[in-house]
Amino acid sequence: MKLLYFAWVRERIGKPQEDVELPAGISTVGDLMAWLAKRGDEYAHAFENPRVIRAAIDRTHVRPETAIGGAREIAFFPPMTGG
Amino acid sequence: MKLLYFAWVRERIGKPQEDVELPAGISTVGDLMAWLAKRGDEYAHAFENPRVIRAAIDRTHVRPETAIGGAREIAFFPPMTGG
Amino acid sequence: MPATIRLQREPFDAAAETAALTRGRTDMGAVVAFTGICRGAEDGAPIAALTLEHYPGMAEAEIARHVEEAQSRWALLGVTVIHRFGRIAPGEPIVLVLAASSHRHDAFAAAEFLMDYLKARAPFWKQVEVAGATSWVEAKQSDDGAVERWREPAPGRRDAAE
Amino acid sequence: MPATIRLQREPFDAAAETAALTRGRTDMGAVVAFTGICRGAEDGAPIAALTLEHYPGMAEAEIARHVEEAQSRWALLGVTVIHRFGRIAPGEPIVLVLAASSHRHDAFAAAEFLMDYLKARAPFWKQVEVAGATSWVEAKQSDDGAVERWREPAPGRRDAAE
Image 1: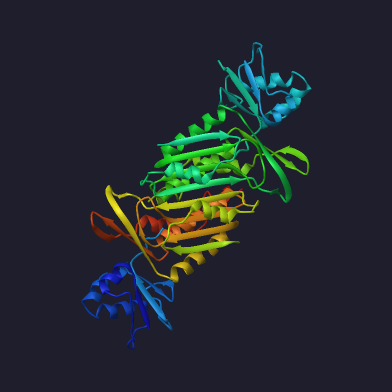
Image 2: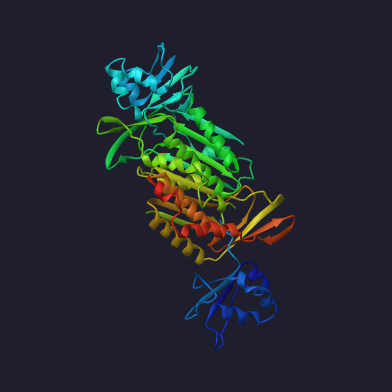
């Protein structure tokens, strides 16, 4: 599965994207964030306050409780500041 | 006193402006409209439905019950359709 | 605050007016431009032209008063209002309102307020030529409603200010 | 309805975009143009530049979805949304929203809806350079509030339609 990171999530993790193999038992976006947070200090820093992290599955905004299902691309980023 | 007419009020009366001497007893804008309506068929036509006529004293919107006071210029016109 | 108010017979250049309002300014984070254009048909009937009559002197003074009101209600950094009179062909611009602010809600609210005002309260009258006949455009009740809603702070917009 | 959506690094020409949207049309009685500009200061501190990051692919798709929503809610005849990314200096334009309609209220509402959406929901992130240091701009709660109000018909605007 392809993961994308933007803005300070990208900066803290230190890369814009990566491919990961998810272990069994990860069914929601929130599960994925909790699992990522344990992958190292840079991930722990990025996901230290998961409530402020926004996520998109296949380029559509989703909530932490959303099931990952057959997602191809999941992105994590801070609240948007466009316009 | 100078009277100004605009749009179909002007067309019905047949002139854009005129100077008039008001007789005694005319104290409000509504009194003036009633007096003007009796000055001839063209005025009667213009003021046949005084409720749709708007008025301004010295370039400020006023209501029929507004006192004429020391007005220099009174204008009568249909509801505005600018913009 | 720079305020430009102009009544004119000639067409205007919205881009040039916007450039004039914003040139050299880095505090204007939001500029709303409204352009009102003469439509080619009214209720399905083709329009040959509009002719706008106005009350010289009063129109300028009334617009200026409403620009001042807009300035007192919203944090504006500049306003331009240009309203044409005389004969206007379909596709030609009739009116331009520019409102510049640091933040978008003030610019949007002021531009819409000024347009609602111009439609219902500014001393202009439109005559329309359809199929060789001219008639005066009737005022719309909805325009009166639109201007009345500004008498109280509109719900849902002031509290959304940035 | 013609809809133009573009993300680009280069500045845009609002006048040329407006001309492209309205050329040859005599049904567009009302055109609202919103331009968002990089301000020269934030909370009193001079800004050297903004840098905008975006999520390619998602940004275009999300904007297109909201243009469609605007089209379903208001009687629109054309919409243009241009959003820049990359480094943007003070005074330079960041975003352009054009909404054309027969009537002004639809054009105003659609432009404001799209801007509120772009501010709070479109996948863009602003980094600001102040005094040699860069930092990510924090999202404003008021922008969330601004976008939430569109979930229900806003009081005082739909009933003022022409």
